Image (cartoon, rainbow, N blue to C red; front, side, top):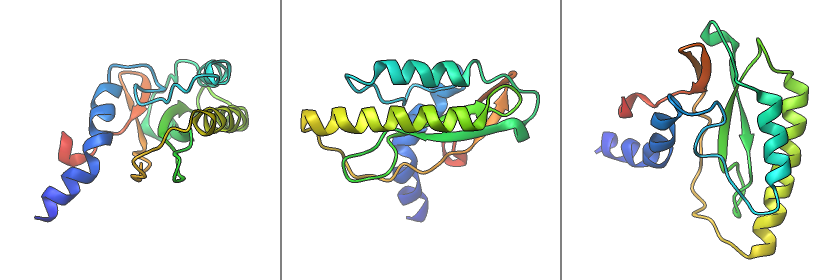
Length: 135
């Protein structure tokens, strides 16, 4: 029963996590709120290709804001290549723009919690970690 509950909790994150292995460092779960595209592009540029040689170089940054609070997604980035302060500032600007777009549109969210999956170095790039139950 606990395994089923844990699997359900990770289901939404799992699809994004599995795809993240072959996707850009920002991941497919990246929110795409209308009106926030320039800030999204600036964050993607700050992250770059998230090149890495080992897991210790990989970090995550929360992105977007759900209507009930908390991030919409997490993006992976590399300390070997990225400037943490610049990435945090770009993520904050994108989150602010995304929040404004969500509020303006009146959209709602599931209010589910999107936990930080962590990041690992896979094939020379930082990607979101896939939960153990989904491997």
